[in-house]
Image (cartoon, rainbow, N blue to C red; front, side):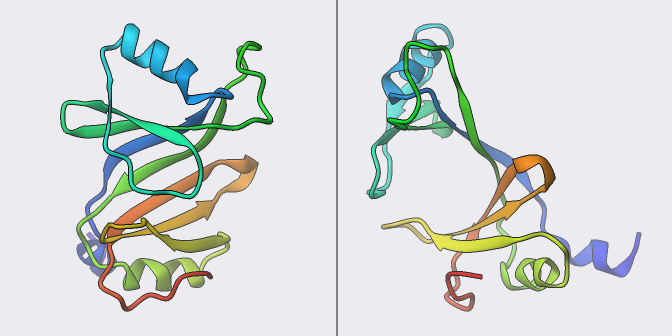
Length: 138
């Protein structure tokens, strides 16, 4: 094991961010077929719903009027992972790397979001506790 490996945070899957036009389409499928239930969603400035498996919100459905809900089109917004580790070392590593990223905060929550753009258009969201030491933006 390298010294840097010991300092790396432990990550776990958190959620998928999806859009199929209206979040109702996703609620109908994930609720009706898989039993996921709508639940608490922070006050984001855009419409959507969070669908839970027990206490875990696993689908973050976002309304996208640019998609025709009847077409079957689905857009993957991002895949999110969560860690309880500090964000500053991750930000430093990203700044030293080739990946474009931006930092945001969940409204009414203590979560820092780091959105990393990978080749091919895949976006990875890294969620970590917000200790106030990392500024929003790049």
